[in-house]
Image 1 (cartoon, rainbow, N blue to C red):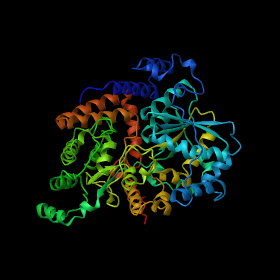
Image 2: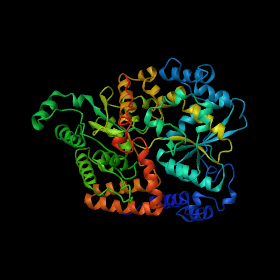
Image 3: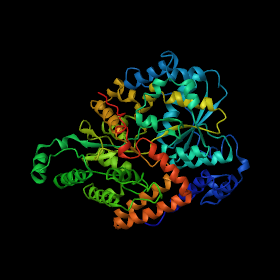
Length: 565
């Protein structure tokens, strides 16, 4: 698909203007004027920047600020209720040296007249602060709050436009790790190192899985707290892989063990075999391959690096997609598509979940909510009404990705707006919300899309009791993070990712892989030139220092793997 849809055109133009400002290429006045002229600019900004105030350009729009509710607590005799009770105890009684207690003690009575504005992705992500952490924090400290729901791209763009306007509209920002370089360089977010020294228990910082502890670091500073372990892993049907007839047939045909695949070539081979044997009742695999839903960039990036690919020539900053690694990756992805459920190339993430939960697929790699949905844990919430009840309860196993190295795809960091009028109050809320006992509740809520990221999450007896194989699920998430590779954490990621998504979609439609890769290289080079080759060279060097940039720089490769039982 070579033609950009109008909304995509708008987002891309917006991103380029903002990235140019962050790179220092445009003045504040220029960007404000440009934003007003991009697509439906009136929906982005009011007629004049002078109208900005504490409510912010976009916070005034109807429906953006949620009405707050009393804190929702589960029955105390349930695992979730016990975790919630533990969180309250940790915040008010003991341990007094814990980060939750310290944050509450520092904030209580000091900020009664303060209301924190928290940005969240619209929809399910916003339910948690509305129903649990926001009201509980208010009860514990007397501090008010509002939840500002934004479309995912707007979590980036609107944080910048409010900063340019100097509105001080937001206090705590939900951002992707990949956005940290741009937002830090542009002065949009503030480092939290001094607050960490003053308020946080160091043991709670070390409770993060090393991958997630390091992700908020940039240029030697910490730019917030990691808050969502979006590590991809492989989910597979234990009944299909344990079938003795399939085992005999596979081993007779291929002279290889019938097993959960450990390489990408084996993945497509096993998937095709299962499809040939069991379709139309069960297909070998299912994928979210639809353009922009949420995008093919995650699957391509992880597989490309497993195949030895590198994104850029570190000296020239010329893109390196049109290489043997790129050809191999697209060839493997095409083979996997052919072995999958009908219509695979047009499925979004939710449609892939539906196929998986209804028993139509033997394998799915996706985000951690998959494990909870597979056991009908998530579906106990009325908010999870977009997927059916699971037909595969008790039949799901967990594995690291084929090739071992899986994408830490997106995720969230809680950052402090540099324009917050109450930065310490904002920090204390973020520390408390991401502290071990409070964050455990947040990753256990049935409707949550927040996923485990702390060692204490993986080892929690309460979480492990949620369903019979929950322990295996958590252990595999921890191990997958040991081999996790990250998104391209540098300015321009949105444009680079969009190019990859468009490239893959074009290949699904029949475009020659080599030609698609060459076009993608051209688009990447144009993006690099737009931002500035020298600036991007420096940014890429910072990326190369980061944990998970490539398979030779994972947590495991650095000797910091977490081994749990």
